[in-house]
Length: 176
Image 1 (cartoon, rainbow, N blue to C red):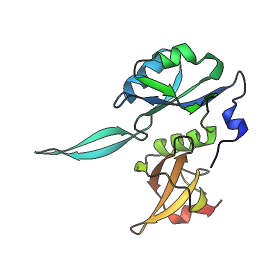
Image 2: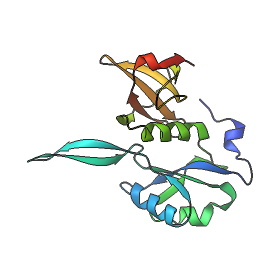
Image 3: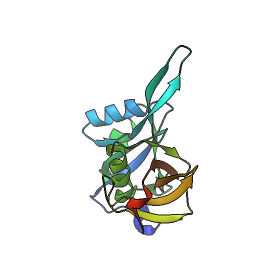
Image 4: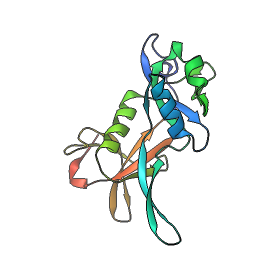
C-alpha cells in the first residue's frame, strides 16, 4: 500500500501523530523526555513472562520495539524532537515526516487500554477486514486471522509495517 499525497503532506498547523525511530531499548527514556518537554507521546507496551533460572517474572515490553509515537505540529518538530536523547529520526519520506493515521493510533490505544492480552504480530496485508461490534473494543477495525483455533484481531500501523494482535471472541466481529 503506497502513501497518498494527503498522508505525505500533512496539513500545515495541524498536530498529527508521528512515529519516532529510537535507539534500541530507549523507548521509555524517549517517552519520558518527550512528555517532560510537553509533548503528547504514546509508548504502547505489553506484559510478557520471562523464565529466569529460579523463577518466572513478568516484564513490560514495547509493542513496537524501536518506535515511540508523538503528536506535534510538523512545522515545529526539528529541534525539540530530533535532539531528544535516543531519537534517531522521525519516520517519513525524503520530503519530510509522514503522519500516522489517527484511526490507527486510536485503535492501538483502545486495544492497549482494554485489558485484553496483547502482543506484537507480524504485519498482515491480506485477510478479512473486520470491525468489533460490541464490548470494550467496539468500533476497532483490523484483520481477522485464525491461529491454532483462536480468533485474533490484527491492528496495524501501516507506515511502520508493524502489527499487534489481540485474542477476540468471533461473536463480537462483523465484516468491515
